[in-house]
Image 1 (cartoon, one colour):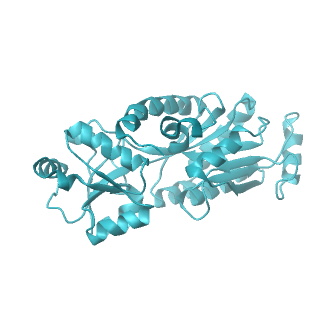
Image 2: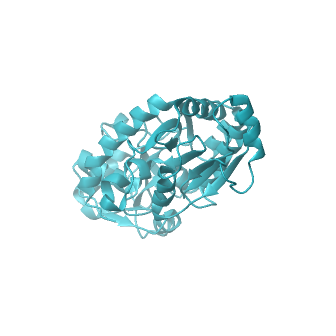
Image 3: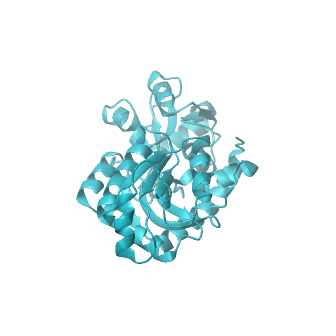
Length: 324
């Protein structure tokens, strides 16, 4: 899912006049209209989260924000569109972690952008967690699961929504950390993977926690552990992998970026607006209902997180052997 948030155009000086002018150039992408692109299609969590953020950022800036979806290639098309946009402060990208962190490692020459050289970090918006979910296994705890898979490697078969997805890689991390033989079984999307788990085709899966929450809360599936830095408010009873002795942290995020060369004062202005939006009670509540954990970090912290996660996921992706 990829999303684009189009922020109305404005000249850089004077700022007040620019804001007035921006509000006048808001319709269907006229020349000079701003374009904040989120790289996934409409209808999913990225679309909903992006539109929620776009509306509130527009209110904070007192500017019109138009959302443009540019789906394709798992987020690559929209990300490249922002890379190639003019660095005039009219274009922002809202994206999850994968196009900026995972794909540069896994997709080789298919990626025609550099996440560090071609973008300006603006704001870290939310985290979301990945969880190990089981159904039909006698394992009630992660310790039970590890012992079971060591006795019967077939019990280590696990599903995810796609090969090359972060849940896929989270399974690779668990197998390495626990010394397990685990086989990844990819599906074409979250819904088929969840259906397979519920039907007993597979007995375990790695999911974004919010995607499996209905099944978990109905008692049809069990979360054995989550891979976040802290327990998830969606399932506070589920322990972290690190609590249980496994050094696995596989939470992902949504963040805002601008094309490289975007003026610093505009980057800072958008960062402040995004952080104010994230911390507003109505947006905070909506994001948490989606299973997202609001953060609200500025450009420097986002740059640090981008580098940390890029370096962390590289070896994991290589170990997975995944090729697109």
